[in-house]
Image 1: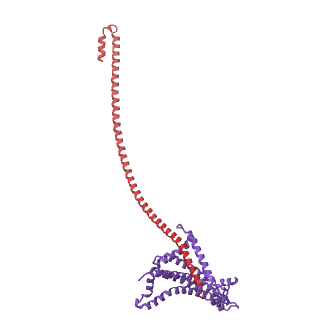
Image 2 (image 1 turned 180 degrees about the vertical axis):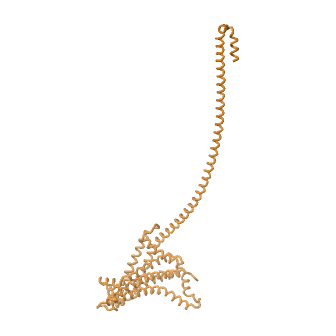
Image 3 (image 1 turned 90 degrees about the vertical axis):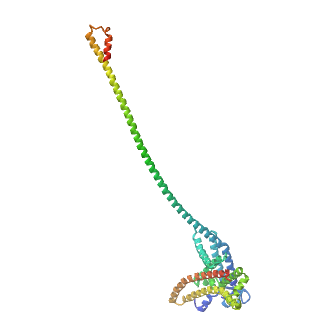
Length: 156
Length: 280
């Protein structure tokens, strides 16, 4: 354990090692470390941002949903109103139509009645004339009494 | 182990002898085969074991770190990258906590110191007999596998740190500022000699304490491992007790080697911080 030139050798070795470490070992490792630190920080920030955005989106979705629900309610109410309106309209239209049909039927019935009466009258007149003809065959000349017969026919 | 050819003292001395390369007494260059020969070599000798193990560990360490650094991505890290990042972040936090200046050198310096010293200390957990016996089998007389139990290694690092502290002190404060810091406080300019003495001691104490703390801890730890290992050769009972002791000491040593590496790193950061601070 004498002090000898090993001291100098050790010193030179030491400086060489330190130089190598400083030149080729330390910088790349520190570079990688700081880069990873940056990446982690960025990732955390992005995560925070994402969380915030998610919260905002949730709020937006809720309000949107509320709006949509409101709108749907409005639409339903409007539709109901329109439906009842339509029903009312249909009802009144049907009533008018029914009245019209009824009136027409009545008119046609009356017409039929008139026509039937007319026919009946002419038949009765014909019968009466035929009866009278049979009775009066011999004494009445149909030609001579035509004016009279027409009168009777008109009166009936 | 204490066999009939080796006494306990010889055993300990053998385990504490570095593999030294230098000028032998007969004038040729070679490996010292005894402590006396190693001592006779003087300053211009090299501890081959200290240098080879520390360089090998450092190269392995930097190779692994470089491997991770080259493929480092900011995506999900793989297991190896995760582990290295964990160490790097630990060191980076220590530097951020203690170092207030701006210097791109300090953090890599701290990482190198921490990881390298930890690995060198870790060699202490290899059972003390394995490596010397393996070396003996290969024909190498001595081999201490823990570089940090060699004061050359710890002083080499501490003095390098000290040189950096001096360099940055002068660079940040200027020569005048640094000399002023050494001479004009704490007693003002009339107490200049006392100031210089106090601050001088303060300054010199930094590398000395840095080196001796690490060396002392590791040397003492190794010594205890060696003493425990001595028990293995003295009867079954003592050997079993020694085994338990060695296990316990190794577990405790895991804490010590980490702590010493951490302390060396933290003090380096603090000294570098002081070099960058202008408080006058």
